[in-house]
Amino acid sequence: MSTHEAWVTRRVEASPEAVWEVVTDLEAAQERLSQVTQLHVITPGPYAVGTGWRETRRMMGASDTQDLWVVENDPYRRTVTEARSGGTTYRTALSLEALEDGAATQLSVHFSGSTAESGALQRLALKVVGPLGLKLTEKALRTELDDIAAAAESLHR
View (cartoon, rainbow, N blue to C red):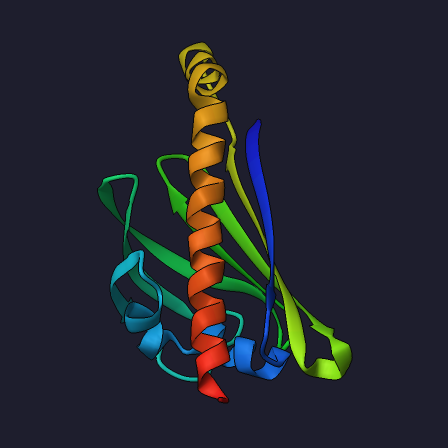
């Protein structure tokens, strides 16, 4: 099995409740998240384990559409989504930690991509382009956290 991981953390000048509102409001995601160009909710209802949506993102000069599913959910603290494509499982965990008696939030994201069976050519490609791919992934994750922060900070001004 081959796994690549990236972690990014950011302080948000908003409560965990405001950050959670932004993270879980799928209907507003396309307007709030600069990398999301289309989003269609597959499973209407409240955000919970089993919620799914089809999302198109523009990253690194290309568009990609994935179906994402909530696989873990601890409101105001943590949510985990998964997407599968071409034998790879992509997992994104967003964690929220209250700071300063809830006046601010530490928002962290852990992204991983795991491939169950990687051939020699795939392992070589990951070794060669892996470091660049990791830097680009971290940049995209920072943009995502910045977008979430901007939306959460503007909610309760």
